[in-house]
Image 1 (cartoon, one colour):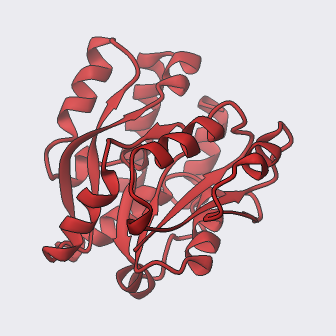
Image 2 (tube, one colour):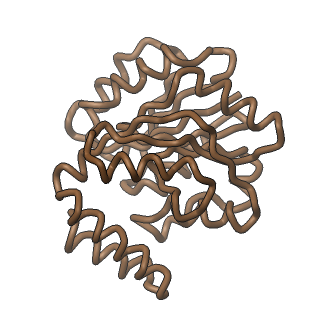
Amino acid sequence: MISIIIPVLNEANNIGRLLLHLTENSSPENISEIIVVDGGSTDGTIETVKKFTRTDVKLISSPKGRAKQMNIGAKAATGKVLYFLHADTFPPKNFDKLIVDKVKNGHEAGCFRMEFDSSHWWLRLAGWLTQFNFKACRGGDQSLFITKSLFDTIGGYNENYIIYEDNILIGELYKRNQFTVINKKIKTSARLYKKVGIWKLQYHFWTIHIKKWLGASADEMLAYYKKNIV
């Protein structure tokens, strides 16, 4: 059984569509629950989730911060497999069966290929690269499934990282040779690229990766992100 964990903060424009999408593209027999972890929304996100009629949709509150929210969601989960999903990211049809099949075949963690909701050639190329099982091709927008036992062994998401938390956990999985890529596409929003500018945002993302490689602390990376992106 899969526990889907969705961290949210002011996602009223997306969360309703995502919950409906999950219902229409999975089988209840594979889903233990859908846990929406709210970090203090003020835009109607909470009201939208509460109106959803599926009894397995749970809404819990958390301090702001995606790592904290996802860890709290994981603690509340009853499924043997955790599936972390961003609110603006929509998995493929039968995503639940695809994940279950991978776990049954011995793969304890992995993600889907990704495509952006944009026709820009660079974002199409970035999405195409996600089919390859290399750490450099990974990111949180591709979603992440992981067995609860492996997640607990690693210690969950590192809450020192307000940004880059997905990459830290994924790095731990690659160290253990515990990662696979499902050859189906998940569609994610390019809204941040549209807001900041494709080349500007890509430059800053690359800079953050290089800073981490050179030994920058979590606080230093966050300061750079706040100065140049938010």
